[in-house]
Amino acid sequence: MLAILVVIFVIAYAAIALEHPIKINKSASALMGAGLLWTVYALFSGDHELVGRQLNESLASTAQIVFFLMGAMTIVEVVDAHNGFYVITSRIKTTKLSSLMWLVGFVTFFLSSVLDNLTTTIVMISLMKKLLDNHDDRLFFAGMIVVAANAGGAWTPIGDVTTTMLWIGGQITTLAIMKGVFISSMINLIVPLLVVSWMVKGREVVSPPQAEDSGLLQTTPFEQNLMFCMGLGTLVAVPVFKGITHLPPFLGILFGLGILWLVGELIHRNKEEDEKEHLTLTHALKKIDMSSIVFFIGILLAVATLEHTHILGALAKWLDQTVGRQDVIVTIIGLVSAIVDNVPLVAASMGMYSMAQYPADSFLWEFMAYCAGTGGSILIIGSAAGVAAMGLEKIHFFWYAKKIAPLALIGYFGGIAAYIVQYKLFH
Image (cartoon, rainbow, N blue to C red; front, top):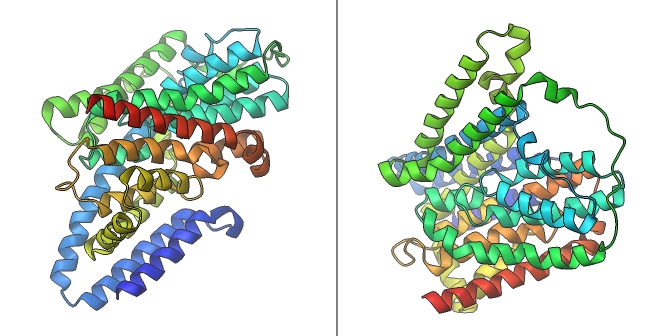
């Protein structure tokens, strides 16, 4: 049975990694994999009561992550519908390319620490189209936005799907991950920024012909500011809610979503139905990426079978005996995440190592959050942010591999060195 489970998982994983060449959505592959794995496990185990109980446990932990992501995605969509991000983007004004690069890098870094990497990338690349006319310049900016978004998402529990998974799973806590990974994430961004800003030094920003943005006329400055502050405030308040009440984060995000929904209904109650329809939470729920949500459900349930059958535990023992060093193992996991999706990698790692052996906020989990979160920047297909940038700016795989990948790699290892030095100094 174990051999069959491993073969099914490897085939499903390969289909997920090769989503673009084979033109099959990774969500379909993840759901097929999960269905087959649980079916085989149920048929071969003989203990249907045990399998049913384990499936219920896995479903409960998966649902917490899925509800959290759905709430967070909906909040971001509502803010975007109200042109809330214009509050930030309208303040970016500079005539030097190098200054703009630093400004965009830091705005992306801090924005992605409270939003998801994908949304931050879309917002910032959309901004670049309004600020830069030269497509070659925009390509470099798009590459750095991917690096900055992934680096920014790694140091907060709500900035990246993988850190959110570790946070909800209890492997990391809010303040510890922020203190532990912030410096290494910042190094991951600053090193490539230094190189790229030197490359564009002395060059002027060439702006595109100005056109009136009709989208901004749909909402008032008050509505933009209110929904931006409430949306970000809700996301930031979730870790505080968890710390005070000790309730799961998904309840905090759903509670915040309810408050945001109420406020939205109140401020638009006097508008005509056609005028306010696209600003409502109901409309935002239709716009969230349900394909990604379904993918998380499939991959987390698939990985759960390997955990319940002790395959991941055996793999962890083999890695410890073969490689031996924890830092090397996690570094390799981060590099692999440049090729394959980091969600199943982290999900597998959570099943490989027990909390009894590696308690919350131990070296393994914090280092995992950094490596899995930033390793995806090395190749453009390694993260959702990279794939989004690829589509928005028509970036070629080999252009990114030649121009941005070496910079991302230097930043990745720079951050690793910073984290290890920091850990040894303070532990």
